[in-house]
Length: 165
Image 1 (tube, one colour):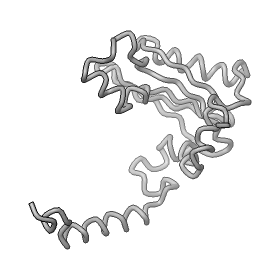
Image 2: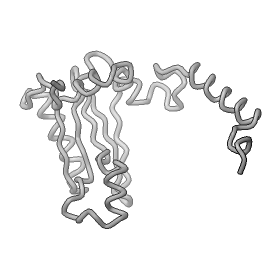
Image 3: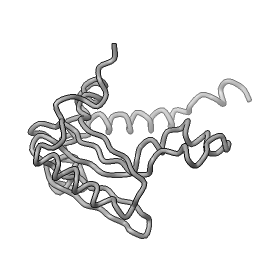
């Protein structure tokens, strides 16, 4: 293989530029979102998406200045975890829980507003985090956290992940 074969062609470069341009023009406030005003990420609307057969769900509930989100635990998508699992260097007991309920401080905004924050701001928006692996309790765990947020039973005054020293 020579060096010229490794270089993108003019057509590939042009295609990349078209995609880059389209992404730069993309409106991040939800106007281009296919879900429109029903999108729980871009707008302060609640959402419940449950697929019992696959034990998959996503529930988003806005409660005052907070958004409560229950979904698959993102730790399960961590490349290191996946690699350890494939290489059989991870015991089943060491696997992260399947589901996560997270409370984000969003103020009067929506979850999409968190994208405008830097890494520190996004990390500091996380005010509560709970994981579990019981699909039968997926909706119940979410409802309990929403109720606790609404009734002031959870201290949400500090980020889950404190500032790095």
